[in-house]
Image (cartoon, rainbow, N blue to C red; front, side, top):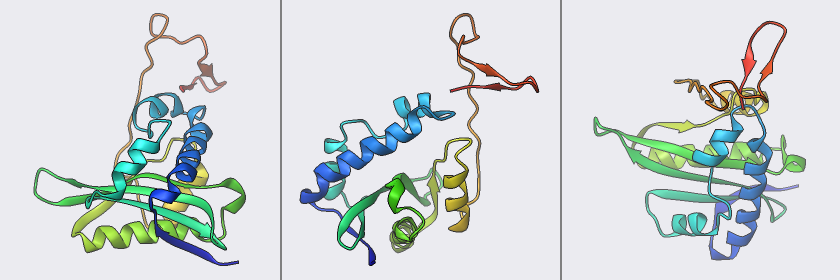
Length: 175
């Protein structure tokens, strides 16, 4: 089994769009996923967003493969900070469930980090939804640490959503 990463090209776009839909679908119902999937996540269908990365020198679109079969992807960009520093931002990183924990995700993230270093970035950011321990552990293994927590108060039905889960400890879990 040979794991590899390469830059995406036009011929990959349909497959990557399908992977993007899988990635968003996997997270949309998770804790925090409702707002994330409607705000930060890639728009589905993703074809035009993915295609725009191909000719953009400030964007990176990668394909992760096992034995030349596409099983994952990463999409990243460079952002300028107010102090003049540059920040790498991982917009998407996804590996199909049956291809996880064999090294494709690690190759994707290592390639993104190396790309950010080459472009003079001072760091790399990525988003992990609360409760996604597998993703949190993946990023921590790659030496990422939390630098912010986004909190949210859902305002539906007078501030209380009928679907909120209130645990026995009194804590409320919001989508």
